[in-house]
Length: 338
Image (cartoon, rainbow, N blue to C red; front, side, top):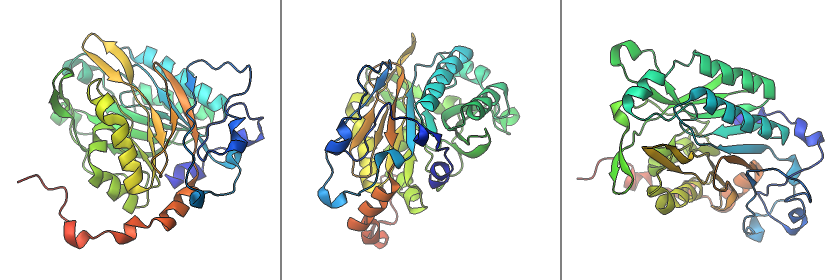
């Protein structure tokens, strides 16, 4: 993810600070959390706990890259979904973000597999073209968390990929990741989910960008592989269920951050999409210490966080867990249970 952050636009540095989102909290920054009288609907700030003194780094918070995490309620209406996402992306750009994250199924959430297949498009289709133009217009990078992609094998398979697309600020596709772990589960009270009815699992990881999608967060092997390949930010755009969400969402995201010593960014779907489906929401950013540093409230909106890669690297020096790993003892992790 260094690629994205190092290339982010930095014009926000010349703007007067209007809103502060703390990655390394300290008393001197608290006054910047929310400017008096500033009205920004659907925007939240979560102030994290103070980190250990040994981890403190003396650098200005305002010199750090600012990222926006968007939360939406997609429906089967693709154009209305685009309008909602575009509004949030433009707001993120106005607030000075250099990278905006959209959740899984930002394009649409259909009522059934047949509708999913009918509404899907190739990466070169009209919808991605609109997001390409949006990235160029706003001058920021876009993480498009889970696009229903008709791949090159569409004619043969009649199935799609759940594709995470990263666009740069010129609208060019920098990376794609096709979801490798498909969600085929039946949770009492949440309804069955059989993603493989319409979707093909992706063949490979995308590293060192750190792209993943939703159900992937349940597989620490994937996050460790991305971190070992050089990722410093892991992304889990999601449409988490209303039953598994309260029990597992934050716990899994914080665990992935702590064990990899990475930032974890999770843009989420929220609310009721249609009569058959609802999502948990609670989009958030977690730092490498495991602290939730930004969090969206209920409903569509966005939250912001600053990414401090110097802090991440210092933490890895103080707590060098990757140097202490014993692959000779557990190198076969990931195999099915006997």
